[in-house]
Length: 596
Image (cartoon, rainbow, N blue to C red; front, top):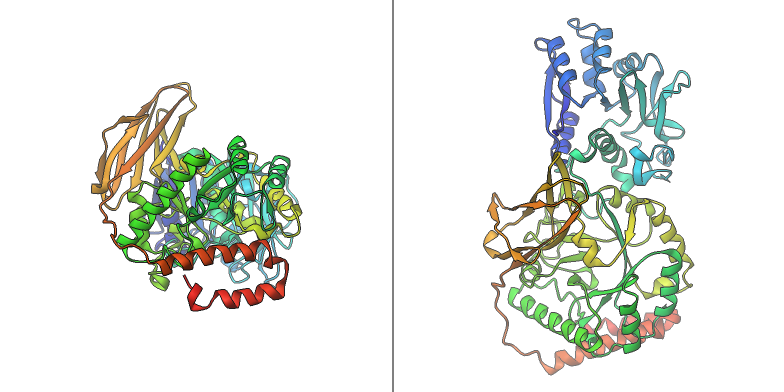
């Protein structure tokens, strides 16, 4: 089964057409660019209609085609009606475009208007879940007044569906015509995936120029485009010791709330504390591994310890962190996820090499921008749309968010990313009502949502697309993944992973056995055959090519770390309850002596 998409333009492709083509390519869509207006317009349109699952054309191109004497508008409209799915994008209030849309909808859309206020919001309908998915029923903003428009209808029509509106005027809608479903998008831009991006993408900023096009393509092409069929979530709490209580966090109370509200929490544990865990809390977390888990939060948790650019020092730091976590597991019998959460959100691109060589599963951070690159990081919107960023040493970086706007998590889930929520103990300052309310909103986004630990979450986060009835192609991000063939027939899986240096791959295992692989054009490639209703585990092991430092840290350093960790605990357990004293604490802590 092959995706067949036609992007129709008149004489010369505009920027919006080229941006759409780039988006289709990003989604793994096989598309054709059809140029009309030069010769055999009728023949090209007829061929396009017969061979394409969906046809997409800008309102500007449609208007030009309608005004071309070589093709009567009625004939063009009838040809468009024969394709199963049609998208007319870039609809604006310009009169020629309005005329074309009016003609294509049989006069139902009478005009198109812009908006003179930016405080309007997007209103997503709640009755078309098959299209709007995680965004269904949400209201959020602000809109993009400069590029968004609204459709004005001449009358109500049962075949017309208002999918997304602004001020009760449709910006994204569909119209059923015979055997075809026509979609209209009243946004004058489609985002350029190669444009610069600064950090986690806010949903409202890219909703009309990106998400609405994705909604159409996913609905039209289903599993033929890159997608993640699963939805995962995890709530990460940074820093706390594994004691009965830490600051405003009480483990027994948190467990009660997790059972009531149905979510799972990972404690980002500082390895320096590996000898300081309460065995009763370790037993609680182990016994309730369905709700609780632990991952790695730095090593000593000093200032910017992983934004260092000395690869030998980083490699040594990781060895120490890993040794401490192993010792912690042996003494407490509490397993941990080999996932790094960077202290203070700071990291360097250099750190990804040692992380990969120590066979960590992934890194998680609130910002995707490395400290050593700053504004020269080169991240694009395409980089940030993927479930994980693989730009640095081809090691996966997952981006998490604070629990502020639920629509941003809807955006992440819609893109196939996990919903990774981050907070600290002070999030529970006023009890658990805030957490309960926000988790309730997250749970309402998708009936597919599963709360789980980071190992399961990351090992099940990959993209796939159906090539034929017995062939599926997958893009993976981490060094450990689980694949499920839920069909009742044998399936072939082509598994791809971006690798900027294939020589670092030591071995690849499939279900525990060494497996042949190839690295071509910077992609690891595996071909795996799966029996009906079976599971396969793929593990990639890397070589550690880095040296370890022989330098022993000074007593002065050890004292600083000791003071930093204990002062942090004094702050979190006592001073955080008194704002004035806490302010004084920060002034003392930030002096050079404690500036680790």
